[in-house]
Image (cartoon, rainbow, N blue to C red; front, side, top):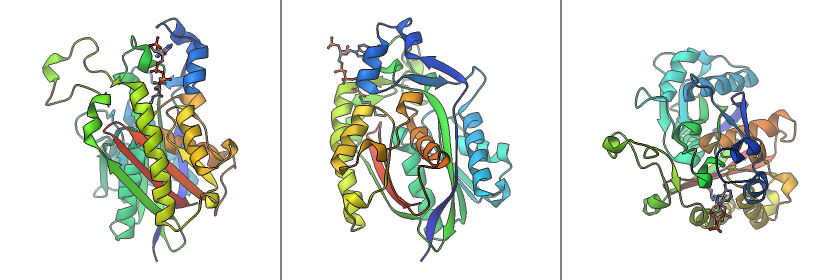
Length: 323
Ligand code: UT7
């Protein structure tokens, strides 16, 4: 039996820290409101000349180092992002070039907003299980600050920039046990960027190209949906809630994370929480959280990890992994 196993993880946050106090000077908000309603204390923002690819390259290099591999060992790159450098080439292709990953390997972006990393992980897992790749770099990288309306207090306090990555390798010991993906396009109006290459391109003024969210409605669907996917994932593997060692959730809001942990009956010290330090980094948030807890020694080999994400589309997904 072949599995895709995690061989190394990496993460990167841009240097510039934006605190809640700084945002108090931009919009009508308060550190207290932001911390109470979201759990966020600060977020990181890219420099003017930094791109999504730049963040991804650093995170991916760190994951390769941790795996003891070279770029030439990699034959697949899947990269989840909703803030790519350009329309094309894909950011994954740019990462391939920057890192010197073997020409002729396969690299492409996966678009699923905040669930982008779990979707990219699912795709890479399928490549490995079907023999299409042996060693894959899976990346989540975002420059959310470029699509944020800095006059909208309902969204600008929530998001941040960053990248996380992991290296998967075909192995006969587990591994990714299962992945579960879902989407529902009928919720498009609750969370979107109402601008693109072939729609709204002629109306790009003011905040037209920026992220719009009806936060409270998104919140309620997210809590409901993530509760369901936790059950689906455990049932598919014939496992029980108490078998899960670590929940590694998408870091959007501490209250959503707490609701999912409660559903699992997991104490919060078994939940990796990084939302306070970097806010919602969309597709980067799960690999950043995973990397944090691997590097500080909390997550140990052999433990059972449950990853879950929810994002614009709506998209949602999970992965159950024996680390
Ligand atoms: O990652 C992709 C998925 N995204 C998410 O999961 C985000 C989901 N949503 C959320 O995390 C939460 O809904 C928010 C953090 C966005 C908002 O929290 P909430 O508890 O749902 O607040 P709300 O939208 O119901 O707003 C409550 C009040 C409103 O004022 P009124 O109408 O009661 O007077 C808002 O205008 O809070 C106000 N408000 C703010 N006040 C201070 C909204 N944003 C702010 C702010 N500072 N930044």
